[in-house]
Image (cartoon, rainbow, N blue to C red; front, side, top):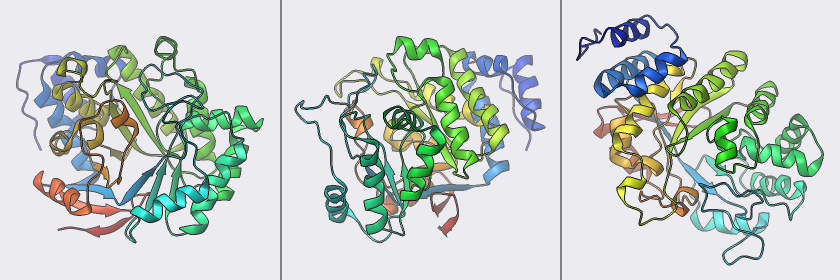
Length: 367
């Protein structure tokens, strides 16, 4: 495929040449792409990389989001999900209560439980172990994708165990993989300004390093669209790319578009469609050692998710059933989709829907 350069821009042409030959982009080149207004060329390059890696296949999974507790010791500036103990709406479910909830919504096609929640210091580490063990016993064939890197750091603090020991205890209970959250922006300046009083940059990366060394494949994210600089976004990707060079343990990168705290916030408080597509594409170009980039419809909506499949995305996430964290922060998108809707969404983008398991093994190809 030959790229059409829509402007006589020598720098863009040089980047396109590197992409054409599979060469790695630098921090400066990533920032340059963010500063460029040539969205179509950036998208075209990202599409080229994705087609080389995945062809026309776009993956999705039948999964279900679960939240055992919304009580949290952290006070991140962007979060509207957390509650204090005793506050109206605060909850901490037992394993049996969660099983009762799951049984109301479960159907046999569900392959994955996606479990995140608050950093609740009022219960011991054993509570978090028992929570996933109860699910694993009741639903042994469902993959347990549980806890963020930040939650693992929190468990380490309340238990006195190392990251590795925490992970080993959770794996014995049924943990199959970590979720990607807790990364936010991997910048100490950002974390200080946004009151991200949980795992720092080094701790987040070290949790995933420990998980990879134990044989767990994991997910990772970036929450963009607040106070971070363009340099911090690209450096975030490079931190992850460097760890991937070392461990090859990440399966997918998920750019998360920041949601306003208020559901009724105007469009000026939300990322633009332009920004969302550009970030998807630049993620695909910078993270050359990641197989998949996810377009997360919960944050960017279903139609932008479709467009994202031409801007480097090879994953449309999953059915979810009922998402709570982004919707607590003002997301206006559906809180879940059916399998048929996901297949329709992907086919509508001219791509081939592939139902997968957590580890990207193909279950069914919808030709």
